[in-house]
Amino acid sequence: MGGGPGYGLRGEDLEKMRIERAYKQVAAVQSASTAFLDLLVKNDEFAKAWLLEKFNPWLGKAGVFKGR
Image (cartoon, rainbow, N blue to C red; front, side):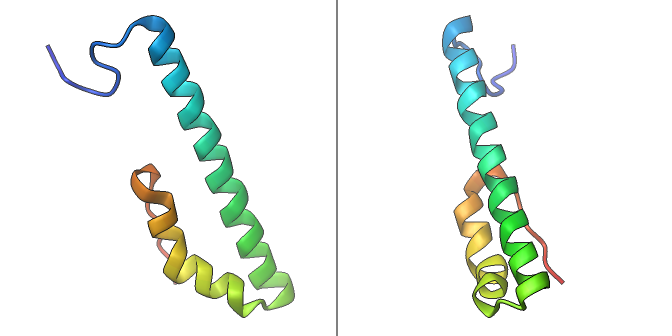
């Protein structure tokens, strides 16, 4: 048997883990979108710095941001 995410967890615990992950994903999308729009519309240098330097560490294992 595989040892993937949720292996060995009961249904209730697995569902709680999925819900927590979903909240973190929504927070990541909202944060990145807000910073991107601040950069684009307001030419906000803080938003640019956050996206390029701080966003990936903030994301952790949730994903990777690649800026241009």
